[in-house]
Amino acid sequence: MDPDRAFNAIANSRRRRVLLSLSQSHGATTAGDLAVEIAAIENAIDPSKIRSNERTSVYISLTQSHLETLDECGAIAFDDRSKSVSPTDATEPLAEHIRRLQTACYKPDLEESQ
Image 1 (spheres, helix red, strand yellow):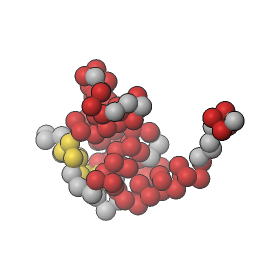
Image 2 (cartoon, rainbow, N blue to C red):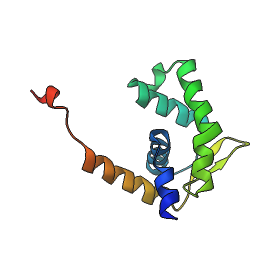
Image 3 (cartoon, rainbow, N blue to C red):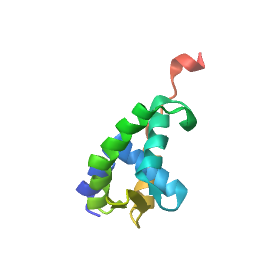
């Protein structure tokens, strides 16, 4: 994958979450399931407590922008008709880079440790 395309793929937090989710699930999922998972992370609540408007907001951004961007660069396979999302050979390497960046950039909140 071209480095510019890879950097574009991981430039957005929702796209990073899609890649991390697919790398952990090791299989296909749906845009709806990803929307619930990402909405739960963004709202710091249990997925079972996600409200319809929270899920819908994430779902629309995924299906109208982010999944297509990831599909076009080969980071995932997205079927717009069925809204199915599958990992590709590029998913895990990109997810590994994301995990490394998260670890390298992690700074614990000093207020919480005092």
